[in-house]
Length: 130
Image (cartoon, rainbow, N blue to C red; front, side):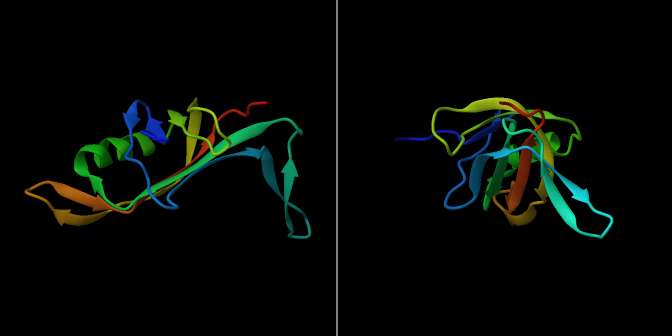
């Protein structure tokens, strides 16, 4: 089986992440609560509500992809992404919010074109699904 895309952000296909740098799982909708005692607990919100959580990272990224990806990730609003889940089937398209971004660092200058290292991010589905 050949996988062409794992993730597409707002129409921008990102390179396939190799080894353990991509994950997309469905998880129960929860929220963190701080108790008066200082304990932190997770409260599950409904039994049927689920959200997609996506993690992607790339070791080597061309400037033509890195800059548009950063613009999308740093926009501050929800973004539309198509993702490849780990539970089979095809790509799933939904609205996501950015939970975290690992900023890339400059790797090399390839004929006056920057090449970046270490871009990574995590996304969470904006609205739960059943």
